[in-house]
Length: 280
Image 1 (cartoon, one colour):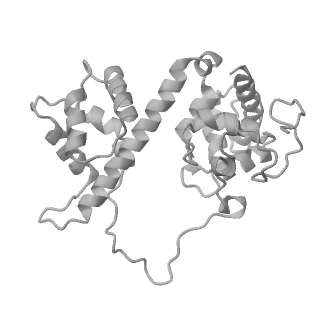
Image 2 (cartoon, rainbow, N blue to C red; image 1 turned 135 degrees about the vertical axis):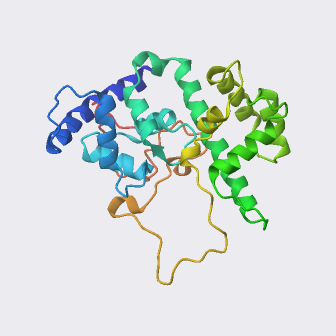
Image 3 (cartoon, rainbow, N blue to C red; image 1 turned 90 degrees about the vertical axis):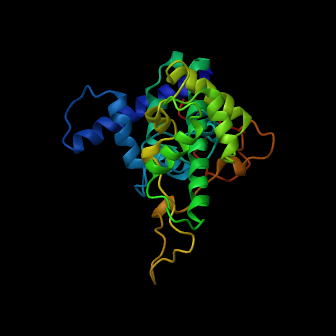
């Protein structure tokens, strides 16, 4: 953990210098900008395709361009905290939280629980999107009109005692009744979330909306939708055209030291910590 803290601080120090320079170029002359203000600027510079998230390829190549040279082992260690489920995507909140967290927070179990809770929310939101897609394929007299409508319907259906809040038992029973695929680990994490964020352990409708990131959800288009003739999916430019999945490239049981695997080109053996040592 000590090495990870040192790594984070080394990255933070270098990116602070780069971020202040970027801010100056954009006409922001405040030399006292905090890392919470600088991190979003860096994120936008790294986000080549401007889709609001960073692939592993975008992140690592971008950091190198900004003078942050990470060995494969260092990159893996960082991603275990920034993106613990290795879903290949890092959003701006995850990026800012990692750079802005204190050494004490990073070393504590509280940080890990926070990250696990965030990942549970993402998976739960994805599962609800899957359910909306499933329902959108069923022809009905009253098709879904909005995410709000779907979530309100789900909430009211789960609220068995009609008191305007959802208890832990109601949520669990509702998940089963609607055929939602949620792991037992995520159910337990959901219970902890409700105890921490709810009112006496129960969620109001607005809290439920926050839980599933309702503002980021969309009703999927019909499955038979055909793109206009000649229209192609957008592609990334330059180095961002290839997504590199670090985990796929690692042999089973690896501790993250993959110097023999050419997922990333050699970085000269000098990591962010400035040790100048190879991972071999």
